[in-house]
Image 1 (cartoon, one colour):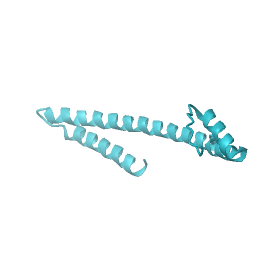
Image 2 (cartoon, helix red, strand yellow):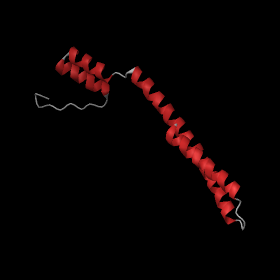
Image 3 (tube, helix red, strand yellow):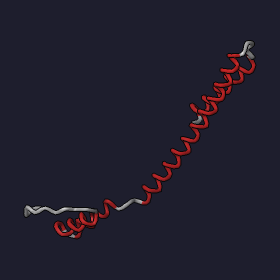
Image 4 (cartoon, helix red, strand yellow):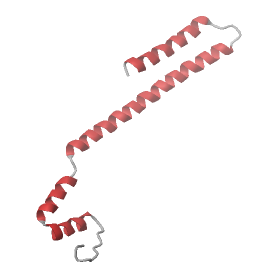
Length: 105
């Protein structure tokens, strides 16, 4: 404080009171305007959080599909006689999944 005193502020209300006492109502009003939540920003953040969640779900589904095809290929490779048609289908599925993720997203 200008007079050398110490003021302890415990919450936002106390800070606003102190600003009003030392700097006036206009300074307090300006600060309140700056810190007021912006409803547009909150809506946009909620939208982005929803989009991120949808992307997480899509990513998990894609990884599960790739894992399934990988397990199919592993099983085919372990067989004594490799079924090239099944192996080709599994490889084609992986190719389609990865193409879709890269190009369509």
